[in-house]
Length: 255
Image (cartoon, rainbow, N blue to C red; front, side):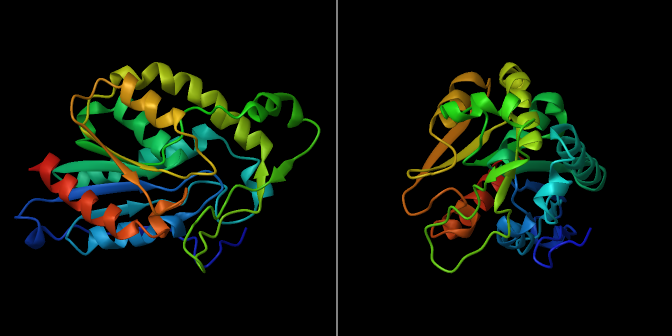
């Protein structure tokens, strides 16, 4: 299946000459039905500061929504796990971040592999929802393959995250099922957290950020409200703020 030209992964090596002689890795994951295009500028900004950066393309993403319907949370989690393996092998410390579902995948990695994750950067992370329509997905997925998409919730004009215009329901159901086990795993998360949340988000409601902050065991949690961005904040008006504060956070927690 052909991959959209803008949806390919990003991989950048560490430049220890820019980071005090130490090799620091950063793993960033895009969200559900999105693509690496939604977070590549974030990754590129961090790579320019000397960090090794991996932005994997999650299986089923960047091609067609129908192909995505043949993949699941376990496939996506395996992909970020492989990227983390690479960064751990090649660097002294690793920070993990993600947008939306990417934030959920990052949290799962931090719960399962606390010794490999020095910090977490979450942008509008999704681990729960107050949307009652999701309750129908387990049955609805047998009747129809997809519903209208959730992509491009971006306040800034003329920006495209190169996601899908439809939501694949079988794939969606695997994510909402995984949320349940992730929520029970949150108390195992001890890494420092930088939590970005858009004040207006038409995809992920505030219940996720509240649950994360209340449930993790991390003692170092900083929440930043993004006042000028919607869900895909990494491409929106507050992107420069995310990039700058991410770099400051990485320097602090790996120092």
